[in-house]
Image 1 (tube, helix red, strand yellow):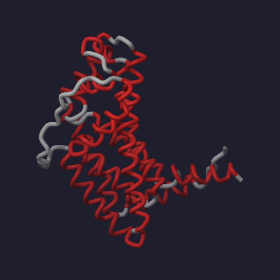
Image 2: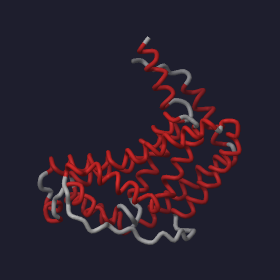
Image 3: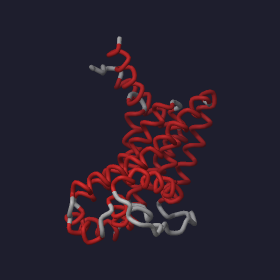
Image 4: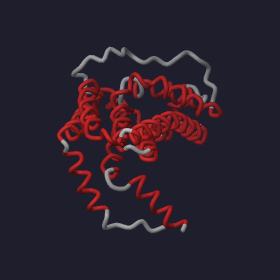
Length: 253
């Protein structure tokens, strides 16, 4: 009995339309990492999360502490995003009767947010700044992740809103939470990698900083594409095709 229930739970979490929605959510998280409120301030976040100074981070010292701090930081902001995803998925479940109108509204919102994220519309949010506070270290990293997860919301809202819109459209708390988790993984993995290999990645981070506008525009184009698929109904067509394709597979636990 238990394996069957586990298989059903997995199919509900990642099957059907989620096969396309999950990569979109993870890519949105990765794009958010390159936003003005995250990448330019990366050394500061690493210092806050680990309690290490800038010179220690640059030298790649104390990698165990760096790993623990960045993982704790990622877990903290992941809790914020997953809670939001569960909420939006639950609300979507209560609005199933209006699924098509909601899908159109979500699509239009995704297009608008994509234009904003690409820089083609002025969203007037200014520049995110790190607060002045002592470096508290690894023990408080999850709490700092929660605080920054909430503080980032205005800056990363275009990408995050697309994910929450997809959660609303999926219309279950489980799928909403899984989508938000995929977003958090897309945003969090670069943090962990940067924490473990900051010195080696210095050149790559510098390149990304110089080209962050182009990267953001690419992310914005992705959001616009998702919005167009939702508005025109092609998203549902793709989902139907994916469900038919996935129906030939069985989850083995």
